[in-house]
Length: 393
Ligand SMILES: *Cc1c(COP(=O)(O)O)cnc(C)c1O
Image (tube, rainbow, N blue to C red; front, side, top):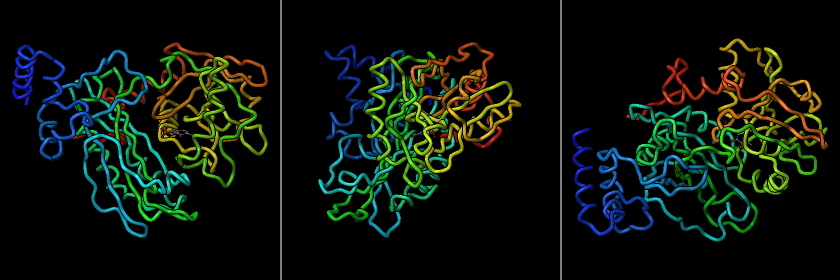
Protein backbone atom coordinates (compact mmCIF):
# COMPACT_ATOMS: atom_id res chain seq x y z
CA UNK A 1 0.00 0.00 0.00
CA UNK A 2 2.64 2.51 1.02
CA UNK A 3 4.77 1.59 -1.93
CA UNK A 4 1.88 2.21 -4.23
CA UNK A 5 1.24 5.58 -2.63
CA UNK A 6 4.87 6.54 -2.96
CA UNK A 7 4.80 5.39 -6.54
CA UNK A 8 1.77 7.55 -7.27
CA UNK A 9 3.38 10.50 -5.57
CA UNK A 10 6.43 10.16 -7.78
CA UNK A 11 4.25 9.89 -10.82
CA UNK A 12 2.36 13.03 -9.89
CA UNK A 13 5.55 14.86 -9.08
CA UNK A 14 7.09 13.97 -12.41
CA UNK A 15 3.89 14.91 -14.21
CA UNK A 16 3.73 18.18 -12.34
CA UNK A 17 7.25 19.11 -13.19
CA UNK A 18 6.82 18.41 -16.89
CA UNK A 19 3.32 19.84 -17.13
CA UNK A 20 2.89 23.58 -17.46
CA UNK A 21 0.15 23.48 -14.87
CA UNK A 22 0.79 21.61 -11.64
CA UNK A 23 -2.82 22.04 -10.76
CA UNK A 24 -3.97 20.35 -13.91
CA UNK A 25 -1.59 17.46 -13.35
CA UNK A 26 -3.10 16.94 -9.93
CA UNK A 27 -6.62 17.37 -11.10
CA UNK A 28 -6.36 14.99 -13.97
CA UNK A 29 -5.50 12.12 -11.72
CA UNK A 30 -7.45 13.05 -8.66
CA UNK A 31 -10.40 14.97 -10.14
CA UNK A 32 -10.58 17.22 -7.10
CA UNK A 33 -13.76 18.88 -8.38
CA UNK A 34 -15.97 16.20 -9.79
CA UNK A 35 -18.23 18.80 -11.37
CA UNK A 36 -15.39 20.31 -13.34
CA UNK A 37 -14.50 17.01 -14.97
CA UNK A 38 -17.72 15.04 -15.36
CA UNK A 39 -16.54 13.16 -18.42
CA UNK A 40 -13.56 11.67 -16.62
CA UNK A 41 -15.57 10.11 -13.88
CA UNK A 42 -18.66 8.84 -15.58
CA UNK A 43 -17.83 5.44 -14.12
CA UNK A 44 -17.67 6.07 -10.39
CA UNK A 45 -16.95 2.46 -9.51
CA UNK A 46 -13.89 2.33 -11.71
CA UNK A 47 -12.69 5.65 -10.46
CA UNK A 48 -13.48 4.55 -6.92
CA UNK A 49 -10.64 2.04 -7.08
CA UNK A 50 -8.24 4.90 -7.54
CA UNK A 51 -9.56 6.60 -4.44
CA UNK A 52 -8.86 3.48 -2.39
CA UNK A 53 -5.40 3.01 -3.82
CA UNK A 54 -4.24 6.60 -3.75
CA UNK A 55 -4.05 7.42 -0.09
CA UNK A 56 -3.30 11.09 -0.65
CA UNK A 57 -4.60 14.40 0.60
CA UNK A 58 -6.75 16.70 -1.49
CA UNK A 59 -5.48 20.16 -2.34
CA UNK A 60 -6.82 22.01 0.71
CA UNK A 61 -5.19 24.56 3.02
CA UNK A 62 -5.68 22.46 6.15
CA UNK A 63 -4.55 25.25 8.45
CA UNK A 64 -7.39 27.50 7.38
CA UNK A 65 -10.52 25.43 7.00
CA UNK A 66 -13.58 26.87 8.66
CA UNK A 67 -17.14 25.60 8.31
CA UNK A 68 -17.79 26.23 4.64
CA UNK A 69 -18.84 23.99 1.77
CA UNK A 70 -15.87 22.42 0.00
CA UNK A 71 -16.94 20.29 -2.97
CA UNK A 72 -15.53 16.77 -2.59
CA UNK A 73 -15.37 13.82 -5.00
CA UNK A 74 -18.54 11.87 -4.31
CA UNK A 75 -22.05 12.06 -3.02
CA UNK A 76 -24.36 9.17 -2.25
CA UNK A 77 -27.85 9.00 -3.77
CA UNK A 78 -30.72 6.58 -3.15
CA UNK A 79 -34.33 6.99 -4.22
CA UNK A 80 -37.66 5.32 -3.57
CA UNK A 81 -41.36 5.89 -4.15
CA UNK A 82 -43.98 6.62 -1.55
CA UNK A 83 -45.13 3.41 0.19
CA UNK A 84 -41.92 1.65 -0.80
CA UNK A 85 -38.68 1.04 1.02
CA UNK A 86 -35.27 2.27 0.00
CA UNK A 87 -33.38 -0.53 -1.68
CA UNK A 88 -30.15 0.37 -3.38
CA UNK A 89 -28.14 3.57 -3.59
CA UNK A 90 -24.94 4.54 -5.31
CA UNK A 91 -21.98 6.87 -5.19
CA UNK A 92 -22.21 9.59 -7.82
CA UNK A 93 -19.72 12.30 -8.66
CA UNK A 94 -20.37 15.31 -6.42
CA UNK A 95 -22.43 17.91 -8.24
CA UNK A 96 -25.74 19.65 -8.66
CA UNK A 97 -28.90 17.60 -8.62
CA UNK A 98 -31.91 17.90 -10.86
CA UNK A 99 -35.24 18.22 -9.11
CA UNK A 100 -38.87 18.90 -10.10
CA UNK A 101 -39.98 22.46 -9.38
CA UNK A 102 -43.03 20.86 -7.75
CA UNK A 103 -40.93 18.71 -5.37
CA UNK A 104 -42.42 18.34 -1.90
CA UNK A 105 -39.21 19.54 -0.29
CA UNK A 106 -39.15 22.79 -2.30
CA UNK A 107 -42.82 23.60 -1.86
CA UNK A 108 -43.72 22.25 1.55
CA UNK A 109 -40.42 21.74 3.32
CA UNK A 110 -40.69 17.96 3.47
CA UNK A 111 -37.08 17.36 4.37
CA UNK A 112 -34.68 16.32 7.12
CA UNK A 113 -30.98 16.71 7.54
CA UNK A 114 -28.39 14.99 9.66
CA UNK A 115 -24.81 15.69 10.60
CA UNK A 116 -22.00 13.38 11.62
CA UNK A 117 -18.22 13.38 11.27
CA UNK A 118 -15.33 11.17 10.21
CA UNK A 119 -12.01 11.78 11.96
CA UNK A 120 -8.59 10.79 10.70
CA UNK A 121 -6.30 9.23 13.31
CA UNK A 122 -2.58 10.02 13.61
CA UNK A 123 -1.83 6.76 11.81
CA UNK A 124 -4.25 7.51 8.99
CA UNK A 125 -7.32 5.44 9.87
CA UNK A 126 -10.83 6.88 9.49
CA UNK A 127 -13.24 6.75 12.43
CA UNK A 128 -16.98 7.39 12.49
CA UNK A 129 -18.74 8.43 15.69
CA UNK A 130 -22.12 6.78 16.44
CA UNK A 131 -23.66 7.10 12.95
CA UNK A 132 -26.35 4.62 14.04
CA UNK A 133 -27.70 7.35 16.33
CA UNK A 134 -28.13 9.67 13.36
CA UNK A 135 -29.87 6.85 11.49
CA UNK A 136 -32.31 6.32 14.36
CA UNK A 137 -32.98 10.05 14.59
CA UNK A 138 -33.61 10.30 10.85
CA UNK A 139 -36.10 7.45 11.07
CA UNK A 140 -37.94 9.24 13.88
CA UNK A 141 -38.01 12.47 11.90
CA UNK A 142 -39.13 10.69 8.74
CA UNK A 143 -42.04 9.17 10.61
CA UNK A 144 -43.09 12.66 11.76
CA UNK A 145 -42.83 14.11 8.24
CA UNK A 146 -44.56 11.13 6.54
CA UNK A 147 -41.47 9.98 4.64
CA UNK A 148 -39.94 6.53 4.11
CA UNK A 149 -36.44 6.37 5.61
CA UNK A 150 -33.37 4.20 5.05
CA UNK A 151 -32.89 1.38 7.54
CA UNK A 152 -30.19 1.84 10.17
CA UNK A 153 -27.92 -0.51 8.22
CA UNK A 154 -28.51 1.28 4.92
CA UNK A 155 -27.82 4.63 6.55
CA UNK A 156 -24.63 3.51 8.29
CA UNK A 157 -23.41 1.69 5.20
CA UNK A 158 -23.97 4.80 3.07
CA UNK A 159 -22.11 6.98 5.59
CA UNK A 160 -19.20 4.52 5.48
CA UNK A 161 -19.16 4.62 1.69
CA UNK A 162 -19.18 8.40 1.55
CA UNK A 163 -16.38 8.71 4.12
CA UNK A 164 -14.24 6.12 2.35
CA UNK A 165 -14.80 7.63 -1.11
CA UNK A 166 -13.92 11.14 0.13
CA UNK A 167 -11.07 10.04 2.39
CA UNK A 168 -8.52 12.37 0.84
CA UNK A 169 -10.76 15.30 1.88
CA UNK A 170 -10.58 14.28 5.53
CA UNK A 171 -8.21 16.70 7.31
CA UNK A 172 -5.03 15.44 8.97
CA UNK A 173 -5.40 14.51 12.65
CA UNK A 174 -5.88 17.62 14.75
CA UNK A 175 -6.84 19.88 11.84
CA UNK A 176 -10.55 19.13 11.67
CA UNK A 177 -12.83 16.42 10.32
CA UNK A 178 -14.90 15.34 7.37
CA UNK A 179 -18.40 16.63 8.06
CA UNK A 180 -20.97 14.24 6.62
CA UNK A 181 -24.37 15.64 5.75
CA UNK A 182 -27.19 13.14 5.06
CA UNK A 183 -30.44 14.55 3.65
CA UNK A 184 -33.85 12.94 3.24
CA UNK A 185 -36.37 14.77 1.11
CA UNK A 186 -39.62 14.57 -0.76
CA UNK A 187 -38.20 14.89 -4.27
CA UNK A 188 -41.28 13.92 -6.30
CA UNK A 189 -43.77 16.48 -7.65
CA UNK A 190 -46.88 17.27 -5.64
CA UNK A 191 -49.26 20.21 -5.92
CA UNK A 192 -51.92 19.63 -3.27
CA UNK A 193 -50.55 19.54 0.26
CA UNK A 194 -49.70 15.87 0.74
CA UNK A 195 -46.64 13.64 1.08
CA UNK A 196 -44.41 13.61 -1.98
CA UNK A 197 -44.71 10.63 -4.38
CA UNK A 198 -40.91 10.09 -4.45
CA UNK A 199 -38.07 10.40 -1.93
CA UNK A 200 -34.35 10.97 -2.19
CA UNK A 201 -31.77 10.10 0.43
CA UNK A 202 -28.56 11.95 -0.35
CA UNK A 203 -25.26 12.32 1.50
CA UNK A 204 -22.51 14.78 0.77
CA UNK A 205 -19.39 15.57 2.76
CA UNK A 206 -17.10 18.53 3.31
CA UNK A 207 -13.87 18.99 5.26
CA UNK A 208 -14.44 21.28 8.25
CA UNK A 209 -12.49 23.01 10.98
CA UNK A 210 -14.18 25.15 13.60
CA UNK A 211 -17.89 25.87 13.39
CA UNK A 212 -17.73 29.34 14.87
CA UNK A 213 -15.33 31.81 13.35
CA UNK A 214 -14.21 32.65 16.89
CA UNK A 215 -12.52 29.22 16.83
CA UNK A 216 -12.32 27.86 20.32
CA UNK A 217 -12.94 31.29 21.87
CA UNK A 218 -15.88 31.22 24.31
CA UNK A 219 -19.32 31.90 22.84
CA UNK A 220 -21.31 35.00 23.58
CA UNK A 221 -24.97 34.05 23.57
CA UNK A 222 -27.99 36.26 23.31
CA UNK A 223 -31.31 35.20 24.84
CA UNK A 224 -33.98 35.69 22.23
CA UNK A 225 -37.37 36.91 23.40
CA UNK A 226 -39.09 37.85 20.18
CA UNK A 227 -38.67 34.73 18.04
CA UNK A 228 -39.32 31.14 19.14
CA UNK A 229 -37.38 28.19 17.76
CA UNK A 230 -39.95 25.50 18.47
CA UNK A 231 -43.26 24.91 20.19
CA UNK A 232 -44.98 21.91 21.80
CA UNK A 233 -46.51 19.66 19.19
CA UNK A 234 -44.27 21.11 16.47
CA UNK A 235 -41.16 19.70 14.84
CA UNK A 236 -38.45 21.12 17.14
CA UNK A 237 -37.52 17.64 18.34
CA UNK A 238 -36.54 16.42 14.88
CA UNK A 239 -33.94 17.71 12.44
CA UNK A 240 -36.59 19.01 10.07
CA UNK A 241 -35.22 21.58 7.64
CA UNK A 242 -38.29 23.67 8.47
CA UNK A 243 -36.79 24.53 11.88
CA UNK A 244 -33.83 26.41 10.53
CA UNK A 245 -34.86 29.15 8.11
CA UNK A 246 -37.09 30.77 10.78
CA UNK A 247 -34.13 31.23 13.16
CA UNK A 248 -31.90 32.92 10.58
CA UNK A 249 -33.39 36.26 11.49
CA UNK A 250 -32.77 35.77 15.19
CA UNK A 251 -29.17 34.72 14.47
CA UNK A 252 -28.65 37.72 12.18
CA UNK A 253 -30.00 40.03 14.87
CA UNK A 254 -27.69 38.52 17.50
CA UNK A 255 -24.65 38.62 15.20
CA UNK A 256 -25.27 42.24 14.27
CA UNK A 257 -25.01 43.02 17.98
CA UNK A 258 -21.74 41.15 18.36
CA UNK A 259 -23.04 37.86 19.73
CA UNK A 260 -22.05 34.41 18.46
CA UNK A 261 -25.48 32.79 18.52
CA UNK A 262 -28.94 32.74 20.05
CA UNK A 263 -30.20 30.94 23.14
CA UNK A 264 -33.93 30.21 22.93
CA UNK A 265 -36.39 30.00 25.79
CA UNK A 266 -39.47 27.76 25.87
CA UNK A 267 -42.25 29.30 23.81
CA UNK A 268 -44.99 28.76 26.42
CA UNK A 269 -43.56 30.37 29.58
CA UNK A 270 -40.63 32.26 28.01
CA UNK A 271 -38.77 31.19 31.10
CA UNK A 272 -36.91 27.92 30.65
CA UNK A 273 -33.75 27.35 28.64
CA UNK A 274 -34.21 25.29 25.50
CA UNK A 275 -31.15 25.27 23.26
CA UNK A 276 -29.00 27.26 20.87
CA UNK A 277 -29.79 27.41 17.11
CA UNK A 278 -27.94 24.21 16.31
CA UNK A 279 -26.56 22.92 19.59
CA UNK A 280 -27.71 21.81 23.04
CA UNK A 281 -26.88 23.62 26.26
CA UNK A 282 -25.48 22.50 29.62
CA UNK A 283 -25.17 24.40 32.89
CA UNK A 284 -22.53 23.50 35.49
CA UNK A 285 -22.78 24.28 39.21
CA UNK A 286 -20.23 22.53 41.43
CA UNK A 287 -20.49 18.81 40.80
CA UNK A 288 -23.90 19.14 39.15
CA UNK A 289 -24.48 19.42 35.44
CA UNK A 290 -27.95 20.23 34.16
CA UNK A 291 -29.42 20.21 30.70
CA UNK A 292 -33.01 20.71 29.56
CA UNK A 293 -34.97 17.50 28.88
CA UNK A 294 -35.68 16.66 25.25
CA UNK A 295 -39.44 16.47 25.34
CA UNK A 296 -40.41 17.50 21.84
CA UNK A 297 -39.14 21.05 21.44
CA UNK A 298 -35.44 20.32 21.87
CA UNK A 299 -33.31 18.35 19.43
CA UNK A 300 -31.92 15.24 21.03
CA UNK A 301 -28.25 15.64 20.17
CA UNK A 302 -25.93 12.68 19.76
CA UNK A 303 -23.24 14.84 21.35
CA UNK A 304 -25.59 15.76 24.20
CA UNK A 305 -26.32 12.12 24.89
CA UNK A 306 -22.62 11.19 24.71
CA UNK A 307 -21.53 14.08 26.93
CA UNK A 308 -24.12 13.12 29.56
CA UNK A 309 -22.59 9.64 29.66
CA UNK A 310 -19.01 10.95 29.71
CA UNK A 311 -19.85 13.43 32.50
CA UNK A 312 -21.33 10.63 34.63
CA UNK A 313 -18.16 8.58 34.02
CA UNK A 314 -16.18 11.57 35.31
CA UNK A 315 -18.23 11.54 38.52
CA UNK A 316 -20.56 14.45 37.83
CA UNK A 317 -24.23 14.31 38.77
CA UNK A 318 -26.12 14.96 35.55
CA UNK A 319 -29.73 16.04 35.66
CA UNK A 320 -32.13 16.54 32.79
CA UNK A 321 -34.54 19.15 34.11
CA UNK A 322 -36.25 22.43 33.29
CA UNK A 323 -33.72 25.24 33.91
CA UNK A 324 -35.17 28.73 34.55
CA UNK A 325 -33.16 31.40 32.74
CA UNK A 326 -32.73 33.25 36.07
CA UNK A 327 -30.71 30.33 37.39
CA UNK A 328 -27.89 31.19 34.99
CA UNK A 329 -26.73 33.87 37.40
CA UNK A 330 -25.55 31.16 39.79
CA UNK A 331 -23.88 28.95 37.16
CA UNK A 332 -20.14 28.25 37.30
CA UNK A 333 -19.89 27.21 33.67
CA UNK A 334 -22.11 26.92 30.63
CA UNK A 335 -21.29 24.99 27.48
CA UNK A 336 -22.90 23.90 24.22
CA UNK A 337 -22.73 20.53 22.48
CA UNK A 338 -23.26 19.48 18.89
CA UNK A 339 -21.52 17.56 16.12
CA UNK A 340 -20.54 20.80 14.41
CA UNK A 341 -19.42 22.72 17.52
CA UNK A 342 -18.13 19.83 19.64
CA UNK A 343 -18.22 20.96 23.29
CA UNK A 344 -17.98 24.74 23.20
CA UNK A 345 -17.54 26.96 26.27
CA UNK A 346 -19.99 29.82 26.73
CA UNK A 347 -18.30 32.95 28.07
CA UNK A 348 -21.38 35.07 28.53
CA UNK A 349 -25.14 35.08 28.13
CA UNK A 350 -27.05 38.32 27.73
CA UNK A 351 -30.66 38.36 28.90
CA UNK A 352 -32.79 41.52 29.07
CA UNK A 353 -29.67 43.70 28.81
CA UNK A 354 -27.99 41.86 31.64
CA UNK A 355 -24.74 40.14 30.80
CA UNK A 356 -23.86 37.04 32.85
CA UNK A 357 -20.33 35.71 32.65
CA UNK A 358 -19.00 32.23 33.28
CA UNK A 359 -15.74 30.47 33.96
CA UNK A 360 -13.97 29.58 30.77
CA UNK A 361 -10.94 28.29 29.09
CA UNK A 362 -8.63 26.64 31.58
CA UNK A 363 -7.72 22.97 31.24
CA UNK A 364 -9.37 22.09 34.52
CA UNK A 365 -12.79 23.41 33.55
CA UNK A 366 -15.60 20.89 33.27
CA UNK A 367 -16.07 21.88 29.65
CA UNK A 368 -12.42 21.18 28.72
CA UNK A 369 -12.39 17.85 30.55
CA UNK A 370 -15.52 16.66 28.79
CA UNK A 371 -14.33 18.03 25.46
CA UNK A 372 -10.96 16.25 25.73
CA UNK A 373 -12.60 12.94 26.53
CA UNK A 374 -15.15 13.24 23.72
CA UNK A 375 -12.63 14.30 21.09
CA UNK A 376 -10.16 11.74 22.43
CA UNK A 377 -12.66 8.97 21.75
CA UNK A 378 -13.66 10.43 18.38
CA UNK A 379 -10.08 10.67 17.17
CA UNK A 380 -8.87 7.35 18.55
CA UNK A 381 -6.54 8.84 21.19
CA UNK A 382 -8.72 7.46 23.98
CA UNK A 383 -9.81 3.84 23.76
CA UNK A 384 -13.50 3.48 22.95
CA UNK A 385 -15.01 1.22 25.59
CA UNK A 386 -18.56 2.09 24.67
CA UNK A 387 -18.90 0.78 21.14
CA UNK A 388 -19.30 4.32 19.78
CA UNK A 389 -16.61 4.16 17.12
CA UNK A 390 -16.83 2.52 13.73
CA UNK A 391 -13.46 2.17 12.05
CA UNK A 392 -13.47 2.12 8.27
CA UNK A 393 -11.64 -0.69 6.61
C1 LIG B 1 -28.15 19.03 15.20
C2 LIG B 1 -28.64 19.84 16.34
C3 LIG B 1 -28.13 19.71 17.63
C4 LIG B 1 -26.94 18.84 17.96
O1 LIG B 1 -27.13 17.49 17.68
P1 LIG B 1 -25.86 16.54 17.50
O2 LIG B 1 -26.45 15.22 17.21
O3 LIG B 1 -25.13 16.57 18.79
O4 LIG B 1 -25.07 17.09 16.39
C5 LIG B 1 -28.71 20.44 18.65
N1 LIG B 1 -29.72 21.29 18.40
C6 LIG B 1 -30.23 21.46 17.18
C7 LIG B 1 -31.35 22.40 16.98
C8 LIG B 1 -29.70 20.75 16.10
O5 LIG B 1 -30.19 20.94 14.89
